[in-house]
View (tube, rainbow, N blue to C red):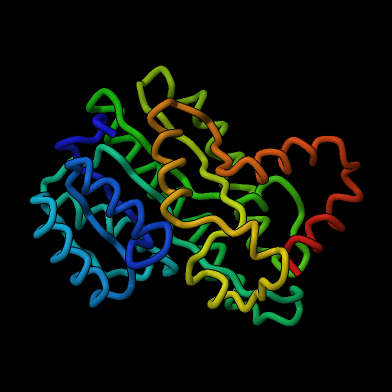
Length: 260
């Protein structure tokens, strides 16, 4: 984590869950932060806590990244702060559990805007800046569902498959410019995500749930090492390995069982 000491990281979706864990771990490593989310009150509380406990500088930007044009607006705001972003963490995301036709179309549009369009635009904008400065790090939060179909999470799974492929493609493209980019692909994680999505995790499946701290730690280690993709947890690593041996037409059955 010494890699990010006295550097600046921009974290989207920083008000809770994995985003908050990223913020705490980077702050402990002496990394200055730009925290982005819709809930300004939570960001301000986190800013006050981290500045007091670690002495780093924290900037807070309240913005809804599910809106068209939000990526460019955020980029201009950070330029005005005159703080070059050394680490971009595209973490913001949400889902709504249910079959495609049971979920209103505007919800699908918001998911795609946030996790595909805005993510791509932010990556383009900050990668271009990093290229000019001679390097940087980008961490894109995908999902275990990036590796297989996800019935009842179709738009979410499709978006995360895009993120995974996008990151793995850029890992090769951006390597000559000394920009390390990784896709973080967590499985079940103890965050607000499940409450918001409406997914219920019960019984033995609760044993597979990881903490947001362990997921964030794996992501940061992975992007420092330059891994194109990172799957936290031995169980989930084994699952991704096993998926390779399941016929494609049966993977949707496996995916539905995992997301039900």
